[in-house]
Image 1: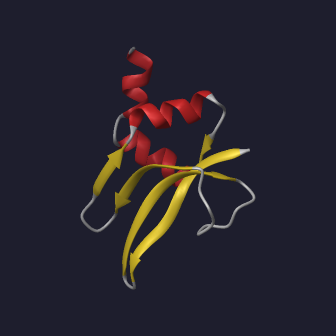
Image 2: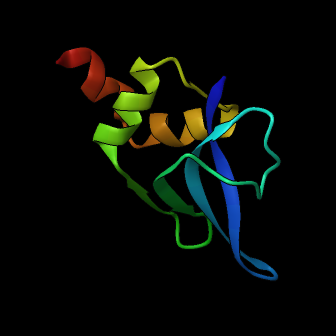
Length: 83
């Protein structure tokens, strides 16, 4: 099973997260299938590759709770339901 989850990058005390599609059995820093965006909690910046995220969601990938909240804040699901 594939999940969309956060992968930690950045320095000590300065986290930056990549949003990745990754196998459930892999650890947090494990090898990902595809990078689909990033999230910087300090600057509150988000970049989402919408076509890739849609592709993985259509294939059955489940977002984790935190990634779901990030997508909801970016109004990802609002755009998807109105189309």
